Amino acid sequence: MIRLHIPQPLSSGAALAPTLDQSRYLTQVMRLKAGDELLAFNGKDGEWRCTVAEVLKKGVVLKAEAQVREQITPPDVQLVIATVKKAALEFAVEKATELGAARIRLTTTARTQPQHLRLDRLDAIAEESAEQTGRLDVPPVDKPEKLEPLLDGWDASRRLMFCDETGGAPAMTALQAAGAGPWAILIGPEGGFTPEERDRLRALPFTTAVSLGPRVLRADTAATTALTLWQAAIGDWDR
Image (cartoon, rainbow, N blue to C red; front, side, top):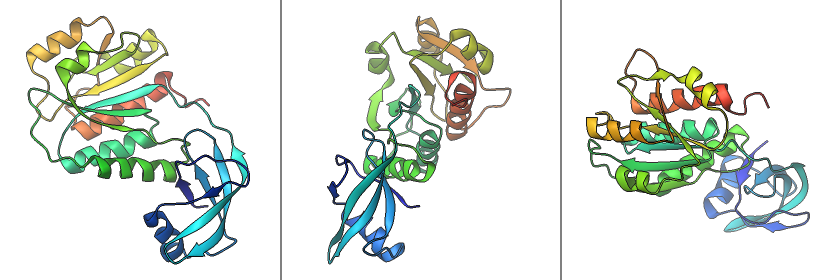
């Protein structure tokens, strides 16, 4: 069944107004008409079965009928990734959403190459990925922040999985030893971290430096791999 993220309150009988693009998708692509059903979620009220109440010239009106899934709390893991090339970053955002990242934070480092970013495009990718994969929320994508101030303001209660291409403890072993709780995963730029950045990261009390294996991975591959390992070690895959 079609799923839509609609950031409006969901309750029995509530009238919902999808965006113009969503309305076009429902009527012109999926050919829905009055009385047809779909699912909607907003990140707060669970998932609801809805019907198309009315098809207008410029949009549709939906009616929330019944809740089919209660809201669940996603794993508390964030992805912090350097702004890499467009295709790689879009892939990372899509896969991070699929793999359950609660938030995606962009950062710039000493070796980050300037990129033209469209946050609206990244938000749309995260939303579409959530709709397709059964998530009940959409992770926000934060605007880029320099690594140094990001670390200066870090909440020390959130552990940081530092994926170090120069080596570290095997990821599964290190994660299982550190245990569950709030986490973030840090993925560097295509040129890697500088020695100075690496030294600072390793000196932080909340950092767990890990290796993702014997091969140097592209940033988008590293992000997908790291989230997979985190989920397998201490995530929600046993739910």
